[in-house]
Amino acid sequence: MKINDLMILDDEQIDYDSLSEEQLHQLVYSDNLFMATSALIELRFRNKIIASLSASSILSKPYGDCYLQAAAIETLFETNFPIAMDYMKKLDGTCHPYILNSIMEIIMENLSKFQSEKERKVSQIIYDIVQSLTGVDEFIDSEVKSKFFNWYSEDKKLRSNLIVHS
Image (cartoon, rainbow, N blue to C red; front, side, top):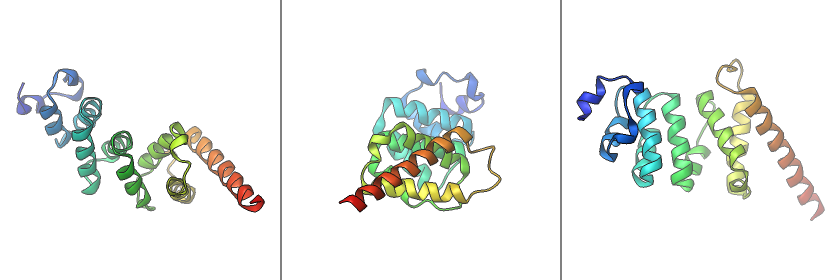
């Protein structure tokens, strides 16, 4: 099936498993953001290099909506951790709450990767931004936020105690 043929279908009508990596790569940049997100996720499972390059491109422009950008961050986290960390360090208060929620989920699911000072800085940035947000309950999952805030607070106390006792 050609890309133009795919573009007339709805996201649910496409069997992403049957598409080539080239077709998936093309769909990542389609105007249909549901398709783009699904294509990026499928590409992440098949070709980490192309998925990483696509995710970097999405985030550098930025391209797409908060869902595609969140999928791009997740893709980078899985395929190119240093670039994902660099991107997250640059976030500020203009970052969409859904993206922040996705990052909190990533951190909570991968605590072992957030042990060094460099990665902790990302946690602090996300904590500070989310703490300053108001009226975004529809995008920030309260359970995710609570778990992240509890972990961050406990981790900060632990670090403070280690510094005091050393």
